[in-house]
Length: 415
Image (cartoon, rainbow, N blue to C red; front, side, top):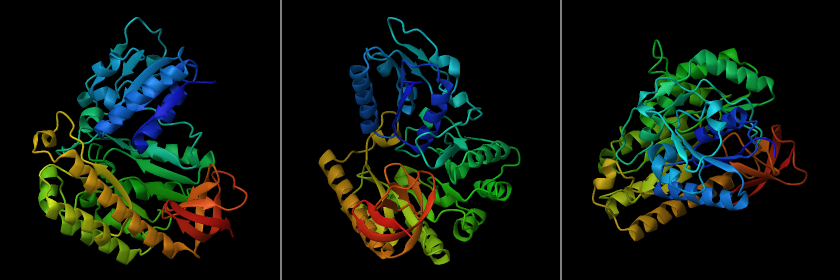
């Protein structure tokens, strides 16, 4: 094996950071890096499972645990006998942190994440397993949603200067990438900490203007209340921006939204989607939704369920509520787990019905599919496409006739 083994859990930002760590620790062949997630209790459990499995598979390797779960509860990971070192999110972008000899006890290398004022100076130099390139433009979050522990794992919001972002994207395009995804913890807060407080819309405009060879730009999750007129115009009018908008909605009931400390209302979410679809009908809507938030009754749950149809959510990311120690929601009256699981299943089922109806409408259309590994790819609207016949070269954009659909996506053949 050449270089470290990376095991990445959680969000797209972790994917970016894992690729950076792969470069930073390129000379560490005996290293396994677990880049953890803390968004739910289940995510933390998965990190522990990954550590144990890695140790059984490669008993001589040094295991480093980093990411949000490690940042929030480092002692619990350091106590695992399989772990050689625990790195905070502020330390994992420093190459020297990966060059060490394991001691008898795992050491913790961690600083105050809330004291960070800048983003990492490193940006991934290669994306060896991804046709799409992911570029970190923002990290951290200044909001304090009552269910979310992530600000304590990522720190406060901080942005990458636009010139750095543009240079990175130019380099990626020169390396052959045709699609770039902008990522962040709270992407729509981009720029508030930079001189002049540039917005995400201004950053996108600058990228499109200064990197004319970039064919496709995609944005990761957006906070619906922070989509201003400039960003809205770009999402609906700029063909180089892919017609797929993923919204951080979380719930469809106003009282639950208030208890979550979200900043939008149900009516505002619905109105935004109506405006998006009216201006660009092919836009596909994705959304995060939490099932079984504390105090949620049947009527409130029904409002969230109905939101899937009212906002035409075809990519529903459904999370059963998971109380995270240290958050206000963990101190609220909890629902029993069976109810939480049942409501999550109902949201998933409704989302799948909505997606299937949408996928049916795409059969017979022509889609410019970005080919990925394994004979698969994604259409501009992010529909998953499995190619019939010979698999095209990963990274190429293939004009594809959609021939059928199934529960997970579409099938198609090169036109």
